[in-house]
Amino acid sequence: MMWLLETRLGNPVINIGIFATFVVVTLFIVIRVTRGGKKKAGDFYTGGAQFDGRQNGFAIAGDYLSAASFLGIVGAVALYGYDGLLYSVGFLVAWLVALLLVAEPLRNTGKYTMADVLSFRMRQKPVRLAAATSTLAVTFFYLLAQMAGAGALVSLLLGISSVIGQNIVIAIVGLLMVGYVLIGGMKGTTWVQMIKAVLLIAGALAMTVWVLAKVGFNMSSLLGEAIAKSAGDGSKIDLLAPMEKYTDPVALVSMGIALVLGASGLPHVLMRFYTVPTAKEARRSVTWAIGLIGAFYLFTMVLGYGAAWLVGPKMIAEMPGGANAAAPALAYELGGTVLMAVIAGVAFATILAVVAGLTITASASFAHDIYNSVLKDGKADPAKEVKVARWTSVTIGVIAIIGGIAANGQNVAFLVALAFAVAASANLPSILYSLYWKRFSTAGAVWSIFGGLITAVVLIIFSPAVSGTKGSMFPNLDFAWFPIDSPAIVSVPVGFFLGWFVSIIKPDGSAYADQSAEMEVRSMTGAGAAGALDH
Image (cartoon, rainbow, N blue to C red; front, side, top):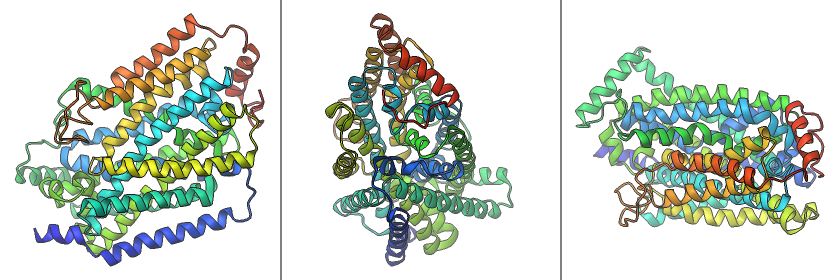
């Protein structure tokens, strides 16, 4: 237990120093890249679309490789082996859907937000209101994961075991993320994402090589050592066997649907396609992102089994943060306090960068889609719109802090899977129908978004993820009647069905025939994509 105590405390001075260094350096960069810039809405929302495909690919990787990827997946693999790898595979395969079906036509058709695409050939107000509501809901679930990751990291590294202390740290993370957004907008946030992606992938690569070097770069030896350590700890989990954690095949399929389809409906990822000047660069950015993300998820397999071998499932389960502590604990075992502090600093940077991206997406959606398009009929003053977006980011920060306190202690990979389920249910059906089905109507879009969203959220609330089990968000309560954690197996088909059925029984007719033709040409060819949405 002395080792556990040392890991828990580490060296708080070193840890805080590395955290503070990253914050100061990135804030300096944010101020430099945004200094003297124009204060137009496009600059705040999309950074003026000035990033090339490679830069945006790194930024997408920075946005996508969240605390779930680094902390949650490594912990899931260390404790559950094969079943934990399902997160890596699902998160990666999801990008193929984004690359093949969404990236280019979305960039060709939209301007700032997902709602630009959904409302292109429909009545603006109801569709934008529905899309903005969905964006805010998905953002909230994703923010829960990042805030939970922040609480786990700090409890491990700074020796803050009290609930009050962890809640204070979550509040500090929320304030920092608002600061990034207010100061830098999308341009500053994108630079933070790129820096974070480089640090995270480099850190994971270094640890991967270090672990493999200990077994002579023999993956079979690593797996054997991990299995032996797990058995020695008394674990009944076979790290190479499927269906050890997910014993219910229906639950497994449901989670797989959420992971594979969710990425193409994540608003903060979709918004990244607007930060490049052309559709070609959008495709290029996704290609870069797939390469970077794919390499990283290969690293998580080695790191997860390395943590199972060098740290052990029993020790991981007993540490503050539980499964989320596996990656920092592995770093401690490899390189001591300094390496643990560096890796934890990178993970902390990951959280700050991702929550900044989520915040700017949600604030843009509220200001552009609700304030400007719904309340001001699309005639809001751009400066006033940006001001509303900034105030919205402050509000979102407060909500994220409250939600993060409630979710503190949950596995962050699982929490992100819930966000993916909501995104796949509420956003993806309407996006695909808008881009590829001419008969998709305004009523169909509204029913698809709200139907998928409400179904997913209700099933999550009444699932074991929230109550009824020791690992639930509220373990002392029990109001769960839906039997599985992920609602995707029900909610995604509901979203697709409602979009199709309501469009058939309540079509728009010929009212938006011209816009429909324009959208088809623009989405497939890119002609006119640089123009403003003026219909």
